[in-house]
Length: 457
Image 1 (cartoon, rainbow, N blue to C red):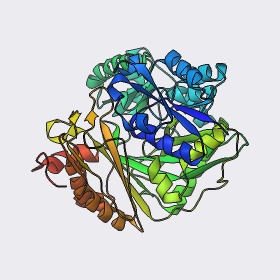
Image 2 (tube, helix red, strand yellow):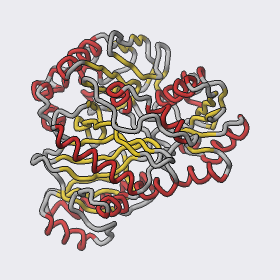
Image 3 (spheres, rainbow, N blue to C red):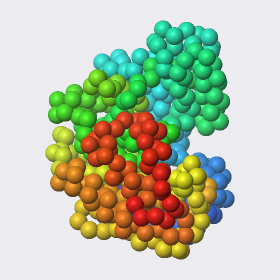
Image 4 (spheres, rainbow, N blue to C red):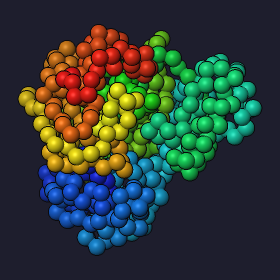
């Protein structure tokens, strides 16, 4: 087992990894930018190293500084968390070349799944259904338009190296296609330094279902159930839950088997998710694979009792994972992401100092956060300040617990999405499980109506 893990990340995920490592008897090293000097992950780690100025490009994304920090502090492994360098194959390779274990999949696996066009080909080759689309990246707009006309509008243009909703544009007709194509390419170049895009048929009223995958170096690969991530805004998830209200036992078995088959096809090692779209007719299609721990991993942890971060560490150390088959799913779990944003101002970021921070509690309530009273939310990074997760015997109880938890989650000094999330919980369509990826676009005006800053959920 490792002796010391450097955490190449910040915020709540850094704290989450510290807790898992401590339970395994492993020391930790926190890295931080000048803006994160007062962050809790710095306080609770055994050692810490400042990487540089606030912008991520000058700190958290500086690979040489991360490797140097690991060597100086004697860390024998690096956990990348999610975001930043978590799916950077070059970083994983440099870790290996430096004699430092990378807690994640192999560089080859990251590359195969990181390029969305290659991932589609890989999954199609092993019989996993894929959304109809171009065979690979396409540069010529006229050629791309020809495919779109044959496939039938609407279509979606996606960055081949994309993620996080960046480099994605929906074109609803031929007149709109050229503009959407160029916008997607420009955004892809800006976000990823790679302008390659491909075109897929756009599935209306689809649900975003992801299956949690876990594999080890001993040939074991399983799934730990699904998460329904359909409540999202601009391709960014806001609410996740499991089990999905849309899945029957037979459909869950079929989708789970396909997810495992795809992961086994690349001998996947570590935690990851196979992302799928479920259309209105009950057909499912592979979308992409995320080769890292997900923001919403607590949903699966509370549903199954499996500590995914500890399993990541154990697998990276060469141990067999403790689960050899899909565990039973117990009850229902919902997660809400609490962001420092103002819903009434088009979800504009709301950085600043938190004056009051009271987190909810009670049976089945979990809060993952790095925030506290007196903490200043910096403007340089993602706006998420907490994840609120509620576990109930069934979906109705989970929703009831979430409503109460949101009512007693008090944050003052900045504007947050807590009141907005409370309105989603009370929405009759959400209560019935009747929603899809465009739910917030269709219900947005109603959900924002009479929502005033600082109002109770």
